[in-house]
Amino acid sequence: MNRTRILIPAALLFFLLPLCAGCAGKPAAAPAEQPVPVVNSEPLDSTEAKKIALKDAGLTEDSVTDLSVTSEKEDDGVYVWEVTFRGGNYKYEYEIVLNSGRILKSEKELQPSSAAAVPSEPESSPAVRSAEEAEAIAFEHAGVNRADVTDLECELEKENGTQKYEISFDCGGMEYDYDIDAVTGTVLSCETEKD
Image (cartoon, rainbow, N blue to C red):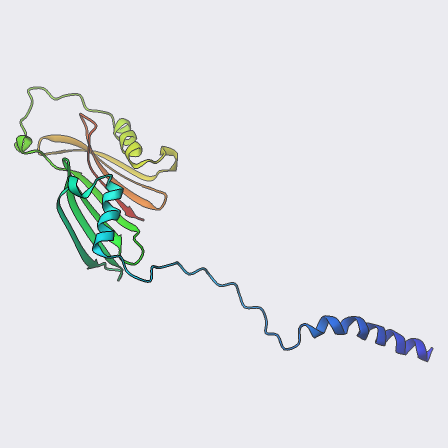
């Protein structure tokens, strides 16, 4: 009987010792670290910022005028390149994060031609598109689906004799603001900004 009492503890020790040997002297596992966003080691120069904006607008440097690139510090401490230019009948404004090249904000605004500087009142008002048609134009231009849109606002306004829809909505972490000509359906201006 004495022999049995000695063998059972010895057998337990034999099986448990290898399991504990791996634990000795090791610290508890550290919690998983959150991934750190990759940032370029070198900030973008003005030439790279200009290329990013022109590519996004679908234009080339020789097809634009009034091209300007300046650096600026945002209210949240982020440094950005502000890129502005004119292409066709539009004025473009971009804010591009200096360290990552990410487009923080883009704006495209239809500029009136010199021939249309003084609007004239037509004898009869042309037919106005519905708000739903104007919204559909904005959604198509932004490349979003109506089902994914939140916080939609649409108002019919009259400015300088022109009726337009002011449309704003959120989708995919971005805020969109559009002005759509209520008669022709032309995108007068659009602005996107990170939500």
